[in-house]
Image 1 (cartoon, one colour):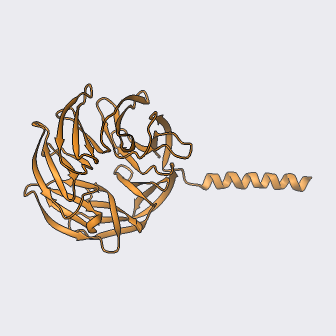
Image 2 (cartoon, helix red, strand yellow):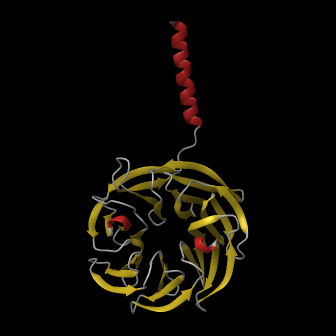
Image 3 (spheres, helix red, strand yellow):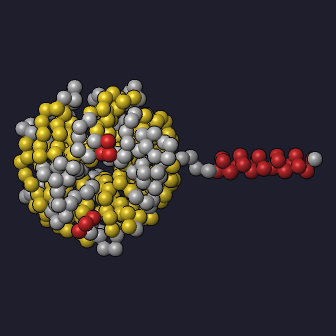
Length: 327
């Protein structure tokens, strides 16, 4: 009896010791905000910081969800879209841009009341949307290979930049745009002033480069491949590889947390892979569980939060999971 009691005591001490030695999780789940009756795939997210609203491209539902982040509830759902993929908020004109895959349209909504204020027809597969705050432009990837440049003041397309294949994730850095093109197995570099491609970087044995992030101050590009599942850290100057790491499967978003020198990779495999720069190289510091198929997200540095879109699956309702980075 005494021996059994000692064994239980020793086991408890070892368990406490192991817990004390375990590093804290790099992301802490703070809340789950239900999205209501949303079925199918959820694509990209955007935020209106002034109103604390999150926009959710509910592709499989042909809708756009608007989440009140302060109240942590759905404010409104806009229906009648055509497979919305990309979404962005343009602050100077207080306009939400929603890019639709099915009909190639870009729907424009007034930020204040979300009324429709315009439509731009790109023709095919309107996808990722980025805001060029330096030039006051909206850039949208679409079709079999193009970037459309929109003037938000006139709400018209003012330029078309031709590419070798359909653009997936892309990032703007000054005069340049870095563009993932998995079908061509390339990353193309576009000169915005010239409206043309100036360099092409082959992805070699890495395939399916969908998500991309950038650290402009550090002159680094972060590209995630699905086959094989790898995170490649590149120089924005010449495309050279600075680091290469195995990561989670079916990634669709990647973000840089400059404050903590971290990179967050969101994967449909059901985790957020967290890497941290230490002594010039990157190390995995955690794999935070989410849900199967939850591969799109948005990190908002101004709010210091990572929002992960979770689709309806396996008894888990559609929701936005809110993570706080730690420490």
